[in-house]
Length: 485
Image (cartoon, rainbow, N blue to C red):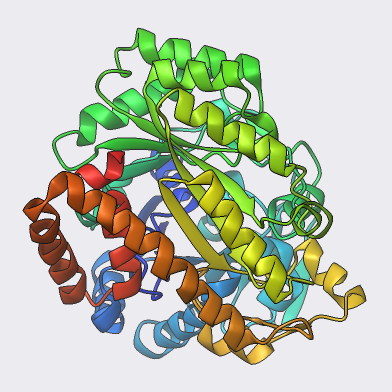
């Protein structure tokens, strides 16, 4: 059978290169008798309906899958409506991904949806397509919920895939616009782990851990992981692939694993050819691990500061990192010449104006190379939703449902501690200081070249109808030498 897997990104963000979608489509193509393609809206925002119709009519899928995230659910519904109107009233439509797994009842209830995948879809979809191709019953396919004659049937849950080393390397050639991704971000997303050992309340990972049986946090053999990175580097090095980005939730969680990865990265000759960037955590960024990363070619780390206030960071978000641990982490990064991206989250539960200023001042003290200020998102299914009820905080449902489709802009929490408009103003205040400081530093080094690159980059984003604020942010982070500074 033939299956189209859709990434319905209409947010205008140029970096939504979905690893899960890639893994699903690759697995179906390489490990089954079925065929899959990927339909991605990212660079087709102004003509996505025509693009969708053309892609479906050319590939002629027997089944259509749509990946779901909570912020993109309105795009999922628009996609289903378009499929039913322009392609087929009867083709099975399957939802998968984080939102579908954590919110299966509402997902299967969506109009036009025939089935929902709970958890990792590789083997579940293979069994589903096998059954459809043979005309067999869907009963007993673990991990699958489905509709039959208007009735919802809920099969047993399927455990997480234990041996993730056994899965094929993701084939990014399935993304029609892979070269555009390389132009705007210069990086390729890679995964050596699935799940996360931490239990942050605002993140989907801990509820995912509880959603299905089995072990959620799994790690690959570091040598196999490096082999995949080398394979992708040799494949795309002449197409704009300039930095590897292991997208593992906390790359530095296991010291032994980090050491083995770094040793293999050097042994394969990548340390001098392909810089890499990783996510880390304030409590797992000890000097010995950072030294190993630096020697292997790590040029950048991404660390969740979240808030400058320890109570908010740890009691509200469950981050488990003190201010002093974060300070020491940044000192270690700077000691070994590794650039830093600091992730901050504004406007969360119980945050007052004074606490927002603590975050601002803490970032001034840390002096990250690339400070980012997101706005808090109360994502359905996360633990913080229940916590908010006891804190007397109210979700702006209208904003979450109809306005917000990114982590970047727009407040979504009605709080007695400060207004939504103040949070949005404060984000602009942060950008006014930190972005202008980064621009000044880049201009001092690059001079006229900064402005030439800026014009070219922004013009290309404008032509593709991307969100120009996000394009500017990625220009500062990824264009040319900016990627390494």
